[in-house]
Image (cartoon, rainbow, N blue to C red; front, top):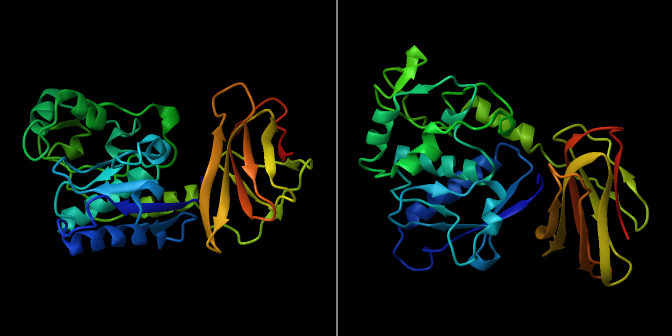
Length: 308
């Protein structure tokens, strides 16, 4: 959800087992994404249990869960890992790549519009060697498998994307221009910057207040978002619901420490023949923020949101 403040912590950073320069470079990676002016914010957090993103430095390759998949991982487990020095040029690119996964980016070479035809036998053999040592299933999921077209929005194949892998010669049959390989991208591409601002545009400072029993019309096109301030007059349980012919994602945050917004609960009815609804206890005169993002509409196209 755009406007989310994502907290990240280091599972291995409390002692001296991880060089401070490594931690600093990960901080730098989050700051680089945020400096693009996106609506997301990244905040370091000392307590891993209070973090959506938990980072380890195990000898287990470099990887990250994608987007809100992080929320389904146990608070004691990592959601992101760096298996090699993140301060080298390739390591810095890896940091930006894994953060890209954490905010919803998939691998660019798996773009179904790329037209890549792999020499699959050579790819499996290549990825089974150093430094990956991947079994065939991992190689299939991360390279060979193409994303479905309904998972992809945005550009055609961006070979310069930070989400693109580098490949040596002989692994790609077509397009012929890449039979000699693809250099590993070492920085965010211009299309990376453009599309992350499309998906997470800057958040407007003003929000309308959503009052109990007063519905707000969601006049939103696909991918757009509405944000509302909620200040309850009583401490009690409330119902939040959307209405109409629409697939939406609805998330509630509570303001804490004067400015930080902490996730409370959410509901995603996307792809289901129903409206999103959740029940939650709110406290008198505390400030909450409800964010509603439209996936699609059908039928009349009329949709609204209300709480009571």
